[in-house]
Image 1: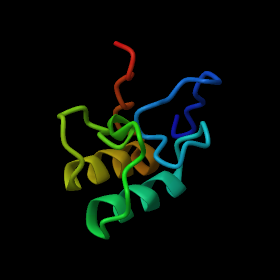
Image 2: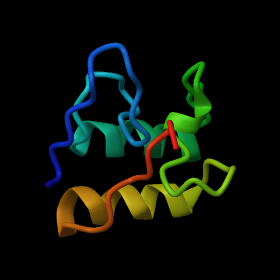
Image 3: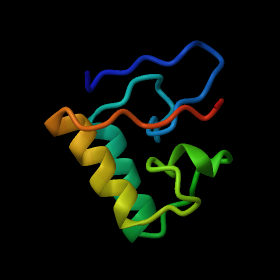
Length: 79
């Protein structure tokens, strides 16, 4: 599902705008962070959607696939 709800009080990798749902608005926020130098969240790992230790175009592509193409779910921050 492209609508992944987070447990209240917890953060989810990919919920870039921190509204506890992963959707197109998170894709837009991540594009702004990756390409327009928008500030990262305090917990930058939220924007590291593919969990490779960086926030870059690969995270944007991962999130687009998840939201629009039923791609792989982002890994938990708590594993």
